[in-house]
Image (cartoon, rainbow, N blue to C red; front, side, top):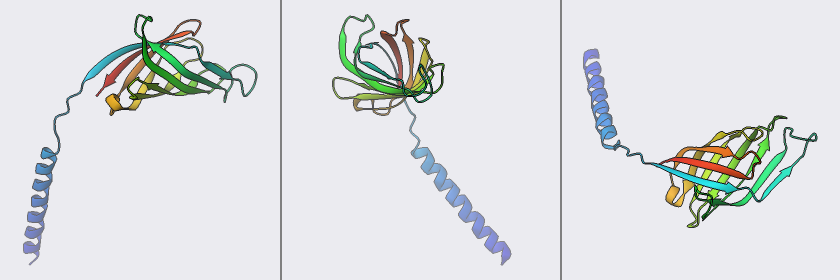
Amino acid sequence: MRKLMLAAMLFMFTTVLAHAQATAQQASPVAVVELATLVLIERAENVTNLDLGDPGPSAGDLIVWGPNALYDETNITNTGATTQGFCVVLDASGICELTETIVFPDGSTIELQGVQAGGSGPSTRTIVGGSGQYLGATGTVGIQPSEDLSTWIKTFEIHF
């Protein structure tokens, strides 16, 4: 009797395993990943610095920007896209945690998060999602501010 129960359990296990394997193979299409590179230049015309703690950069200060126009990589043609966001300062060096939204003329968006180095250093932000033509987008954005922080070159590496 014990051998019969063991044989029945083994049969059920292999049947379930075979079904699960076949189902997993059917449900696993090969993903095609597209990569798009986009370079936009922000002219930082609308920026507000809120010095909320000790005078100068300190934890809790806020930087709020936008909407700021985004230009093509020649910095001549306005693309119609805008950027807006905020950055919470983390320490006296000016490092801040940011959230940024890029809005395109058709209403599509790309959402960014990351850490911006204090001062005018380069940084990388993470694309955490998007909508419209950027639905499901992931990737990174390399940021290179000018020394006077008046322009920000944003190089998007977008994965679909």
